[in-house]
Amino acid sequence: MEAKLRCLYLPAQSGKTRKCEELIAEVKADSDLDPSIDIWISANNKLLVYQTTSRLKKDLGSDEDEEGPITGSIFSWTSGTKLTNIPAADLAREVKFGAELILVCAHRGRLAHVDTLIRQIAAFKKFNKRINLWIDEADQSIKLWTKLADVIALPIVNTVTLVSATFNDVFAVFPRLPVIPYRVTFPEVYRRLKDCEHIEMPADSYAPHFMEHVLSKHPHLMEPGMRAFIPAGLKCDYHEDMCARLLDKGFAVVLLNGYHKEIRMPFGLDTIPLKPFLTVKDPLDVPPEFNQTLSTLYVKHRLHRFPLAITGYLCVGRGVTFQAAPEPGVHKGFVFDYAIVHDIKNQATAYQTMARVFGNIGGFNERPCAIYAAATTFALIKKAEDTAVYLANLVHTEGLETVCMEDLERAAATEEEAKWVLHQTECATLADAEALVGTYGIKLKSRQSQDPALGYINRLLSDELMSYEDLTRRLTSMRKTAYMGCNRPVKARAMQGAHIFVGYRDLEDADSAVFIVRAIGKKVRKLVRKEVIEEPKKKRKLIRK
Image (tube, rainbow, N blue to C red):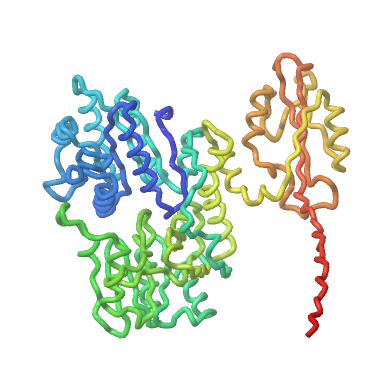
């Protein structure tokens, strides 16, 4: 299975679905490639599946749009209605006679049906189409889709594209995977953590308490018309506590969880139900995306009379978008003024949560969102965001065939690494390497194994001898700042840190050792003195009258 996997690793809320559409369209348009069937595994949310289906029909074409890149049928395969919950055998026949894009939920039962579907398609005689799988938020559903390993191994399955902004859980299972390269990883209008205003607050993992502390210090956040994103954690008890506290402060509260989907109003006003806008009764009549619904309801119910907060658990669901551009004559759009994000320990959860205030909003909003969070939370999210922003570019720049966790670490450290210059030199002997390190003003203990007969080893990397090829490959993917003490104050010498590594061209010949010195120093800004050239003064002409 691993040989068929590839990753589309881009920032959260930056338009990854659009990138997938472009890749699908490229394959459909390339006459040299075998015709294909695409199976899109979305988050475990039927509404999201239907809305994605509508978007793909609009963007890629369908039977109703014969001029689009995809001229076949696009089908939502979900439970709930007779039109969409058909047996695998029936859908297999549809595929044989024209269905080309199938969307399903990342649900245990539905993926079991996908397994059956692929096996039935594979059994067709004289069937020349290949299957491409697209797994959205692949890290979140990894325990489900990895159970498809046997069916993915079938020759009919061509590629499996894993899509997400957070991949640590995937690389924990698959140490090396290819990542689709991109020179530019987000559109010009994308706004991210770097573009927001950061207000650091003392850490508190209980969201309602953290919210109380922030609002007590910044009462202007409770003014009418302010729009806030205030997630409350996993438990419904937390959501109810958060909601009650916000209502007491005069907030209108959008509560989204497994039990309630509604806007609760302050001062005893009637609750506004949201379930009709989040439920699909007819697959031919899918509700608009929630950001459009929210923008419309904000105007219809004059919610600008109150501060408004969005909270709950579904509010942090991946794929959920709240912010929207204005639509003349319908609504004025919706953007967050601020977010209050409590201390979240899991990096992927923290990044995906805070990313609800990010997105491609620069085209209609230039006011930065203010984020109130702990310093540790900001650091955690910055690392995840930088990885998503820089990794695909790193793959593009260096031409990497596959990446590993060390490459993710390098991508995360891109902005910090840019401050340093790496010097790497090969030496024939340890004495030469130590002498070179000495010129840097650094003293190192030579790293020798317990048994000198074995030669020298790299205790930072391995307890065994390393071949020259393995060592150079490891060093290529290693951060410049790794093991260099760059978190310590910069020293007043040429180099901040240095290490000696050794690799053997022949592991059985101690004399084949190559000693590699890696050292880093801060980039020195060159001061350029600009000479100002004064223009000669023009002589004034005297005019005689």
